[in-house]
Length: 281
Image 1 (spheres, rainbow, N blue to C red):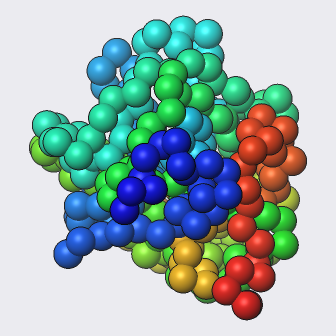
Image 2 (cartoon, rainbow, N blue to C red):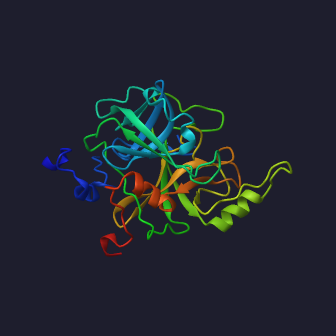
């Protein structure tokens, strides 16, 4: 496709490109991803070590969690790995990009608070390939229904104790959306008397399993929760927090991308959002 050159993928083209993987062929309880399966997944690294996930949303911007960055000015310490399936020897399809700036949502107030989202601008635009493609951003009309089956991906720990074993292959896990009242109920059960039950705020979204066993975990933070809608992969949430990993009655909590539409649009005015009407829905 001659139009994979960066010059021809302008904002109009981006709409056609986002959320369409061109696959050619450990979450807790997750399974290995295939090459090219989640081409928007990135690894954000500090001093050469992976510490957070993120998702490519245009040729120059990555969406991640604000809690990943406690110092947004030291951009030289950070780099972003794109197009990789594994962190160790990521292979010929991957590239490392330098970071130009980090924009944290100004409403963010610390762990488990609302607005745990940040945008990372890469030093230069990347060229889209079969292994490096953006995911679609939903406009506020898009509703992610309860029980809708979505997927969460990342290189985080396979359990609270362990690291993902080498070569650290990207993990994927199917998780159903849990409605907020039910999630609040789960988070308020079995709370130690010393703990304030954590409230699920309006800009949060829960996904996962009440029985535990499968969940995102440490090192997955900032990565995407994506849902397949109208033949397109759309990002519903950013991995934000949970109480431990895969514990009973503690599903994963994500920041809702649609809640921060205005802020994302303000930082990246050229970004096109997917409406729920795409594909005649």
